[in-house]
Amino acid sequence: MAEIKGIGDNRLSCFSTFVDTCELIRLTSGKNKKVDLISRYISCLHEGSLHIAVLFLSGKTFPRGSSHNLNIGFRTILQSLLEISNLNGVDIRRIHLEHGDMGTIAEHAMSKKQVVTLFNQPEGKGGEQLTLSDVAIQLKKIANLKGPRSNNDKKNILKGLLIRCSPLEAKYLIKIISNEMRMGSYEGLVELAIAKAFDKDVRNVRDAMLASGDIANVALLSKRNLLDTVTVEPFVPMSFMLADVMFTASEIMEYFEKPLYCEYKYDGIRVQMHKFKNQCRLYSRNLADISYAFPELVDSAMRIRVKKEERHKKKETRDIGEVDGVDDIDFILDGELIAFKHNKPLHFQELQKRLRRKNMTKDILSEIPVRYVVYDIMFYGKEQVIKETLENRKKLLSMFLFKDPVIINAQSDIIASADEMNFIFKKSRENGHEGLVIKDPSSRYHPGKRGRYWIKLKEELDTIDAVIVMAEYGHGKRAGTLSDYTLAVRDFGSNPWIDMIGPENGDHLYDGLKIIGKAYSGLSNKEIDYMTNKLRSLIIRDEGNRIIVKPEIVLEVSFDTIQKSSRHDGGYALRFPRIKNIRYDKELKDVDALEKIKSIYENQFHTKSKLEQKNTEF
Image (cartoon, rainbow, N blue to C red; front, side, top):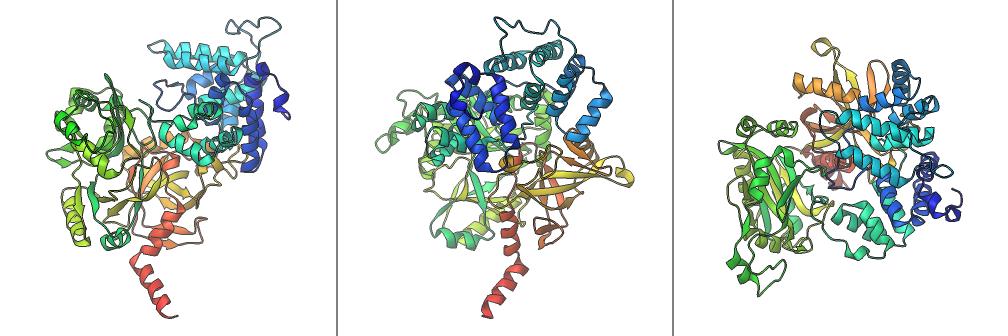
C-alpha cells in the first residue's frame, strides 16, 4: 500500500487491500497521518467500492436511516469461530479478557482454521479474492434474514465469509460486524480524508454530512464534484440542532437584546418525524429508527394535513414548499416525545419502557400513552427549509392540522423581558416540565451544532451527560453487581470517537475523555441488574474488583455542586452526584464536554462571587 496509485482497480476493490489500509491506520500515530492514509486509499477507489469502504471506515455497515440491521449477537459470532477452528471456550474467554476485542479473537481463531466446508466459495479462475462488494452483499443477506431459523442461517453465511478470509481479514470482518473498528478511523477522520481526497473544503463536507447524514453519499458526491447538491433525504435522519446553556433569565435577555421565542423544556426524548408519501418513520437522538415503539404516532402522522387557505394566503410573501391544491404534504418535523397521562407528563423512565419493547400491545399503549410536541420543521413539500428563519418555520408549522391530540404544536410565547421569562419558567415547573428553551426568531436550523441560537434554562445547575469508562462491584446488598460507575466527559474540543486510539488492550483508549468522578445512587435494583449485564458485554479489561469498559453507556447525572479536583484527570469533580437517567437514546458523540463542566463551575453562585470580589480588588 506504499504506492496505492500503482495498484490496479481489481486489487483496490479487494477486501484485503481495505484490511491492509485499516491495519496501517491502526498502527499509525497522529491524526494527520491517518487522514493521509485514508485519503490516498479512497481517492483511487471506483464508486462502488468507495461507497462501501467509506461506510466500513466510519464504523458502519449500512448508511444512516437504512432499514437493514445485522442483529448478529456475540454468541452467533462465537459459534461460527468455534466451528471452523480448534479453539475452545476457555481460549475464547482468555483472549477476550486480554484484548476486549472480538476482532482479535477472530484473527486468532482463523489462524487455527482446520476445516474447509461446503461454506467455502468456489475460487474461480486462478482463485478469486474476497472483494468489498462480496462482503457488502453477504452482510445485506444477513440483515434480510428473519424467522425462527434466521440465527442459524446468519451463522452459515458468516461462516462462509470467514472461510474465505485470511486471519487479518477475519479480524476486520468481525470488527465491522460487531461495530468495534477502534483503530482511530471514525466519521470525523473520514470527513477530513474525503475533503483531502477530492480537494473540498472540509467545512462544506461537514455541512453536507450534517444535512444528509449519509457519509458514503457525501463521499460519492465529493468525487463527482456535486457536493453542493446535497439535500435532506427522505428517511435519512439528519443531526439535530442543539441548545446551549445559560443560567439566568436576565443573562439571556442581556445577551440577545431582542424579543425571543420561549418554549417549555420537556423531559422526554428528541424525535425526528419523517413522512413521505404513504410512509412515516420516527428517529431518536442517536438517529435510530424507533417507529416500532410508537405505532399510534406513525398512524396519526399519516393523517396530518395542511390548511390550504393559509398556504395560498402566504403565497404572496413566500414560495417555500408551495404545492397548490394539495393538503397532504411531505415533511420532516423535530420535536419532543413525552409520556403523557391524565393531562400531565410522566417520568422519563416510563417512556424508556416503550423503547425496550419490540412488540407493542394495547395494554402498553394504554399504560404509557405518549404525546409528540412539535417545535420545528426541516423539510416541507419538496424542499428543505433549514435555511429559513425560525420565525418562517414557525409560520409553516402553524398551517399544520393535527387530527388528534397525540401530536401537537409546542406553545411558543414571544417574550421581551426577564420577568416574562421567569413567569413562564414557573409555569413550566408547575406543569411538571424541566424548564424553558429560549430561541432566536431569526436563527436558521443548524444540524448537529450547538450555539447560542437555542438556550436551555433549567432550575437546577443543569445535568451532565457522561459516559461510563469503569465499573466496580458493589458491597452488601449490591455484592456481585456492577453498581459503582466511573464517569467521563469529552476533553476540550476533542472528539473521543476520533481520538480513541492506542493499543487494543485498552491502554490509552480514552485520549478524548476526562474523568469527572463516580456515581452509584439513583438506579433501581432492576436497572442495576440491567447495567451489570450490559457492562459485562463491554469489557475491555478485567481488573478483579473493577472492569474497564468500552465507553458506550451514557448516564444523565444531577449533582449538588462542582468543585475543582486533582484526583480526576478532568480537573473537576461532581459533588453528591446522582444518576437521573440511563440515556438509552444517546451515544458517545452526545456526551458533554469538559468546557460545560468548567462553565457550570464558574457560574456557581459562590464561585462567581469570589471571582467578582477578586476582580474588584485590582
